[in-house]
Structure formats: C-alpha cells, structure tokens
Image: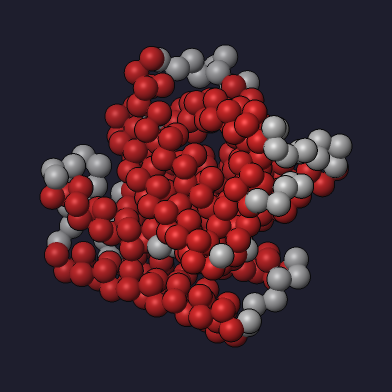
Length: 300
C-alpha cells in the first residue's frame, strides 16, 4: 500500500502542475482570476455529480452526520478562499514557480495536524521543514515578489492546508472498505457542493462560450489531481500525501523548461540558465525531503 500511495501522490503532483499551466494561460488570456475560480467550479460540478452518482451505488454517504456537513462546509469555504487567493497570485507569478511555492503549505498543515493529534517524529518534522525551505528557495530563483503577492501566497497556503484537513476527514467518514470508493464519494460531495456555491454567482459573472471552453483543460487536470490526492490521503495520511505532492516542485521545474523550449513564452517567464540551475537544486532538496519522510514513516 505504501508504493501505491507514493505513486498516486506523485501522479497527483503531475496533474496539479499541468493544471497550474492551464490556469496561468486562462488568466493571461481573459485577465480575470475570479472568473476562472467561478467558472472552473461550475464545470467541475459535472465531474462532482458523476463521481457522486457512481459512488452512491457502493457507498452510503453519511448525510445524517453533523461531522460530514461540518467538514463539507469547511471544505467549500476554505477552498474558495484559497483558490481565489492562488489565482490572484498567478496574476503576478509564473505558474511553475507559484506551484513550487505552494510547498510552504506543509508548515501550517503539519502544525494543524499536530494540534489534531497526529504526532510527527523529529525526522518527519525535519523533512517537512526541508521541503518548505526548498519551496521558499524557489522564490529566490526568479523575479522578486511584491507585498501583495506574498499576502496572496500566505492566504493560499493556509486555506489550502485547512482544505486538506477537511478532505482527509471526509475520506475517513465514508463507510466503504476500498480507499478509491471512499475518495470518489468524498470528491463527489465536495465538487458538487462547491459547484452549486459557484453557480450562485453566475448571475453576475455570465460566462462566454470561449471562457467555458478554455476552463475545461484546467478543470479536468485539477479534478484528476484531487481524486488521486484523496486516494493518497486515504493510504498515507494528509501530511505524507502533501510531502509527495510537493513533488510538483520538481515536476513544475521540468515542465517549465519544456514549455520554454516549445516556445510558450506567454505562459512562462524566460529566465537564465543560472536561475534554472538554482531551481533544480531546490527541486533536489524537495526530493531529499520526500525520501526522508518516506523512510521515517516506514520505520514508524
């Protein structure tokens, strides 16, 4: 199960890195991160309803549980704040760099998990800090960040961390033996609720056909990433899952190099080879942190 959890976590990281590129492209084209946040959730409601419908054949979702509704409400509110903050960050920071900076989410996530009773060993804490430092190091290898960008980053990592806690709890609440079915039920409930919440804003933000088409690639990549991440959470836990998903820092660096070679200058900033070398070094530190956490968890 450890190997399956690691593979799903890394696959989630890959889909998440791809989704950031698509979101950056949408913002560059349509100039409005708020519309991306609302329209993507409207599109994702169809994936949520499909997942919810399939899972209902196998899982008795605890609709009568107050904990279920509490975590679901928390997921919707925290996600919309975190996602909008991240999209506002993307207005000023290239996608591959911003995705690496989200590794800083590990610090508030580990602190919240500790407060909820998940005790980490010293090697695990060291891996968390090392991974977060590597993510912060990405900020030193490109264009400078302003105060507003830093604010949006802090809001994004804190509320994304709260989202992950709620997601992990929702997976554990689902009464099914197989982790994939529990994850499918959780993601179905979450995206259906978030899509309904976002749909309420469509009266003000009326989407054009082109906007809906442009948001589909991001929505598909994001949905795939979250489903895989929930499976990883169910197998390895929220903190370990995020350590693995921080592998998007490595994948984002490689993806950014490929995009620049393909001529996607409108999506990624063209930086020097020296900067790319520093980013690869930070990515290597992330890899070391992932390996350290894996070994520490295996020993426990």
